[in-house]
Image 1 (cartoon, rainbow, N blue to C red):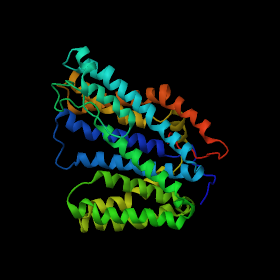
Image 2 (cartoon, rainbow, N blue to C red):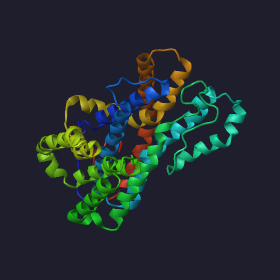
Image 3 (cartoon, one colour):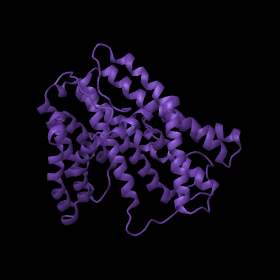
Image 4 (tube, rainbow, N blue to C red):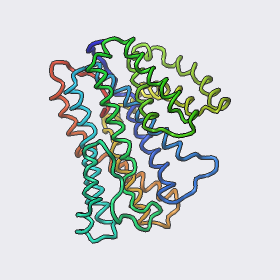
Length: 351
């Protein structure tokens, strides 16, 4: 399974799904940030969890296509860092010099030289998350929290590293072998780290399982493009039985969500082409949304939940587009320097 020409059309729905997922994370977190109890019928944390699963599924699919198109480890690592690091730089600078400087109770000099502030810069290494800053948002329900969603970025990097390692040792040269490796990990997760069986959430195993499932679909992309709808329709009653009948909610989600998301993401429409041309603000929305929400809560603590949510979401979308057009998009154009002779034709909308 060496390098081959793979193409994702520019009018697909992946950007729309990512923007929706980033917005869902903001919605889910807003209950905690404002100290609002969600309605009894709404499992708001599940909404956020499914949103993160969406990110990992789409990433697994598109990043695996990227490796299959150009299986050179240095180029692969470069492209992945160009995707993650510039947005993280924007987030760290905004966290410290905008939101932190304005909303800390500490004197500015003390805040900027505080060990916790200096530690926040280590987020740029992408290997561990530092989500708090000293003295920030002292009157908010979540005192000291600056950027909670950063905790998933090292996990994403871990998935990239695992994929690259498998590629380097030659696993992707044989589709059957690659399929066996992925299915082996999914079986390990379902039997050993599955919250349905253990009663404990293991996000560091669960979200990579969604990444792996997305990669599995990428391995059989041509077949899935032809029969994806049939696969999804066949899996719906099975997943419903697991979810409602056997109460295996996490297992049902893993069975159905990745193929459903990839099927929806590969749908095409003219509006999606316009969305692609407008840029991909989803990463910016995701890693700038939390400090924006905290700032809105600190500034307008008496506002109703929906009013502060809409303001925070609007500002996060604007910030996401600014980050994309000012930093992320221009830096990603450097990818062309990494393509070389193994021309990568995957259209990934920012992946």
